[in-house]
Structure formats: structure tokens, C-alpha cells
Amino acid sequence: MRRDRLIIATGICLALIVYATLTKLVGRPALAGRHESYWIVVVERVSAYGVLGFLLAFLLPGRLTPACCLVVSVAIVLELMQALRPDRDPALFDVLQKAAGGIAGVMLAQTVLASLPRSPS
Image (cartoon, rainbow, N blue to C red; front, side, top):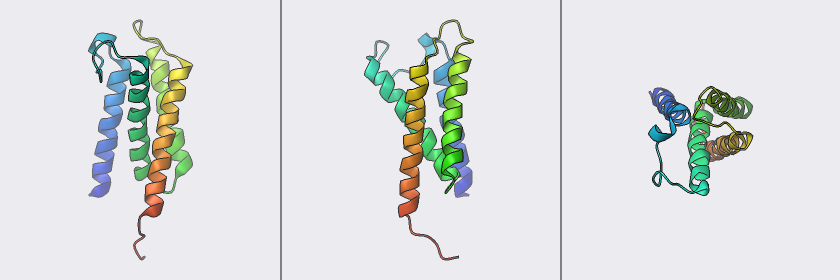
């Protein structure tokens, strides 16, 4: 039952990231209004991918490399898909920010998982 909830939460998080990445700029959700400063946008990117990485790490406990590869792949693919939209501009620096947030989320989750007591088996 717990794993099902993690899968649903991860799917919702991924769907929201896909929506925010590929929607028109006027329809894009904004944290602080339409005229956000650059640093707010960076915080949005890093935190969204951090949550995704955190959830993926809980879905794949003990599998650090696949979780990191998956979150970085999502960042790369979505940024490449932005190139197909005329009103969006993909950038390498955006991918690096998203990947850093995702990897930080995976590392945080691995730290939490390592500190949890293990059940006797």
C-alpha cells in the first residue's frame, strides 16, 4: 500500500513538472506572480526536481545510480522537448539546475533511508 502511494505521488510530481515545462508561458504556474526574479525561477526548478528525486529515491531504495540517472534523464528530455515549442527556450544551464536539484533530492532521500531503523528479516 505504501509503495502505491509513492508511485502516485511520483506520477503527480512528474505530471506537474511536465505541465510547467511544456505549457505556454502565459499558462505556466508562477510562485510569485508573472514577473518573477531569476532566483525565484531557479528555486522553483531546483525544488521541483528535488522533490522528484526524493520520491524516486524512495521508490528505488538502495539504487542510487538508477535514481540519479532517471531524474537527470527527465530533465534532459523535457528540456529537449522545449525546443519543439516556439514560445519556449531550452538552455543547458536550466538542465544543470534541474539535474542538481534532482540529485540533491536523491541524496537527501538516501540519507533519510540510511538513518531509518531496519526491520529484522
